[in-house]
Length: 483
Image 1 (tube, rainbow, N blue to C red):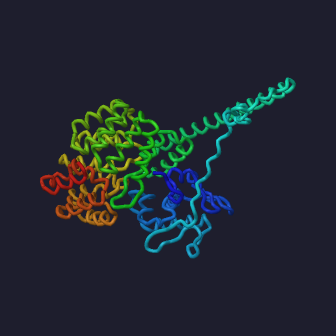
Image 2 (spheres, rainbow, N blue to C red):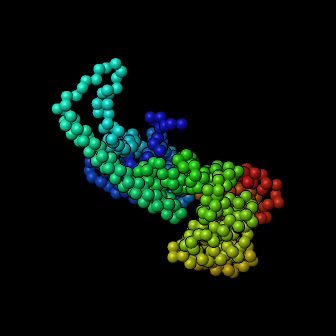
Image 3 (cartoon, rainbow, N blue to C red):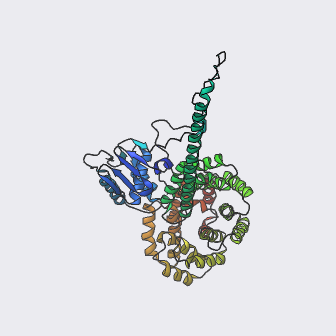
């Protein structure tokens, strides 16, 4: 379905640059240029402006803006208010008399001026366009063709040579420009792909990839990577991430049906976003046919088989992926850690966790798997030691189950309440279980499924839920997730 004249621009188009009345917005450089000069804003403020433009001319709800910009981080309305204040300063706007950003009390914000995408430079003339000069001559039927006097032949030859020279020169310039554009697109693609799996960098990855697509719209790899750059939405939060990831994955496959990355992106969309696991498995199988030894393909095959309880197949795939991947592939190692943990190969999970813990840059989520593996193996003191050394760099919300089982009930109750208000029902369920509050845990799990908490997709294999599996309610919950 094509966009109408009043439809909001696509995300990749906005992130390549747009105009708001007298101001030009350059997302890649975090700059807003107007008559009074150019102002650089914070990256999160620019993300808010892009989200407002994407919703324009409709109202962008506060929850939607926070989800779109801060993803899974728990932030207050004040953080969003500060970003709006910064944008108004850069645009020369006032809340009391808005010309750019209108506050809709109790709901959110609305962008007032029309969003105008930056124009695409026209293609230079080519030999085919130049050859149409006088193109009708000698083609009409029944028209007498006059003989050219012999004395005009040198002049006509000079004109033809001039046209040919200009045509060749313009074509050479065009080829040079296209080559430079493709080179820059490739550079931005590589930058974006490196940032996708880095904590807190997905928005920057999206910008680089959007710019790569703007420079080379036919790059299937860029569209596939752009799809992968969209995070899973927080439970119950309105978001366009799924739609945009779906469109980018479809575009990648359309451009190059033989590109494994396109089918990987489609598998992620159909599984993690849509809970259509059979379709995700079919897409992964196609990716594996195209790239049977690719570590990323094998890693995703392993993860899908883990979620669906096929642990032997999952372990074989992840072991094969690790054999073929460089030891520095931390993304694959993080996936291996999850596969081993959820398949209850806790000793192997601990080995990977220790290796990842020795990295110079802390990796989010490693400590929860490390500590919980010790706990489930009956080593509470080892689990406590991990928590002591990791408490400053591991989100406490991910460690609630372990804290509770180690007797830190007061700490967990406080965290549990914060998780409930922050829309993290699956983590809240773990906190309830750790405290022995079984019925409250069931209620939180029901909320997790109803609100489509992305963490609930591990329901079928999470060893922390072992005491609930004999209850008929567990079977019904698993069926609702599609597993």
